[in-house]
Image (tube, rainbow, N blue to C red; front, side):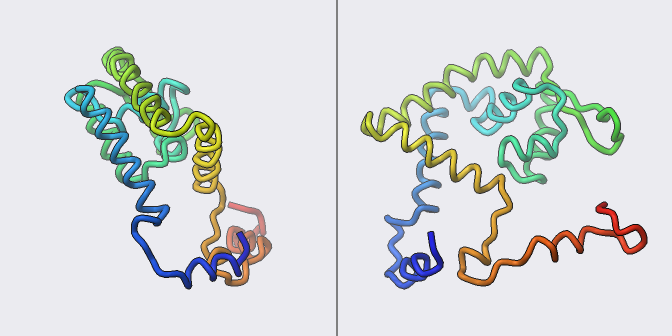
Length: 184
């Protein structure tokens, strides 16, 4: 979207019922409500299930890798992992090559909790897609994938706001040390 198109959108009257951020949040609330209605909240929450699924996909991920995989902010994820470790769902050990990083793995209890939650997670996905016309479902998933990708990329708010984009050259200079000129 060009800066002019963004400006035109900004000039229009704000309507909560047409706000993408609000509509995404409402959609997330619906997903959580469906998951809870399926009786899963007593065992693990939908967000905890997402973390368990991310760990199951690649055992030994660091907490930083899990932040990237799940989109959950660092401090919230750290608190979640600590609670899940206390419940015996995951274990954390020092990562190979970096004792400061923690490698997260599922326990047997964690794998059982994920196995129990997986049908509910799949039902949530099915219910959300079912609420859309069949011919819109693929496009919906593509758009969500693009939005999630934007979160993973180097999102530039200044560009969205129509301000001049900073050059990558300036950014890379900030990452260099004064002595060697090599990136840290």
